[in-house]
Length: 352
Length: 134
View 1 (cartoon, each protein chain N blue to C red):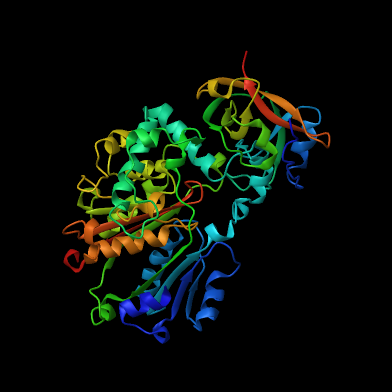
View 2 (cartoon, each protein chain N blue to C red):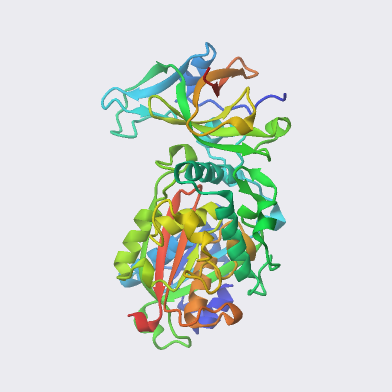
């Protein structure tokens, strides 16, 4: 992936002086990766906020490049959870073993299920609303030849999917696959002369509110409220300006909360919003256009794929799933158990 | 039913687990800012104060969120499915992850009043669970 991304950018390994990685399973991610690739960087970052880590890496890389602390940043993720059947080992922290596992919570699914139950009780959201997110995402996946699940899904089929942890059914949960991705970033000035039209980071912001679901302040609202509003403010754009949204879809409820928290609809109205077909191809808000973690791929962490797909959409490379004229895209990562969000607003050269 | 996943004990949490031997639910409260703290810590999450007092509570609260698990999260729960995993908000304001037991799990609803009950662990400790208030 690193080779492909560098070739795409028209840069060499020797140009890379900033390394950003987090693979979840090892101790010193960026150190190990740099050794493997033969890089001695002057900027290193192994930040792990779960699935949102790669949006954080882009935020950090933009800041480092802006400050002159590195010039060419390489962000890499690779994971083999399908082959390795790793289980939940990394999720079992001390407090979780003591205060959660005795009660048999299925991690991470059960934590998201608790949030979904609360949203339903508080706002009247229904299982059909969550299922519709899976149905809409499958429509996009049918247009991505690399997606794992491409067969169209009806709402009736979705609603007959077995319940794993109520209210979440199997179709509400992301895939477990193997996969990898990489991103190259450099200054706008240097990017101008490279072989591809650059896509610009217009804004980026991160926040986290808890690690254990017990400690989440309000199970119906994520800190996407915080990261989203700061990223949009930095970019100088509004949710209504977004042509493509790549929202982390570890579970359907993750998407529903992100839609509300980023301001694509009002708090509590996510169910009605998705029921309108807003997320479908041709809908009001094209979202998870690769087929997302629900249908395309989800190798433990999906954050880098949100960014790759957003860039591809803005470059107009997406073929049958291309959102015509896309100029502004959002990649919104969400890691842990709705714990850590990071929002990146991207734009074409026209948006500068 | 099989035995529970055995929760580890730390230096910080030892008073909590000791109290469960007498079926007392005890929670830390900061002597400086009066904040209730769950789960047990070595410092207050409001003011970093170190004078945290173990305080017995009634164990009364309400269901804040619930998920009926049809797939067990740990092998020890294999023969209990389906079971109700819940966040219970105690009167003191803290939220504990727990199970609501002794009822049809599908009957557990957000907002219901619950009270603490105890399930024996193999080493003499008891695990706090919750039952619907009568």
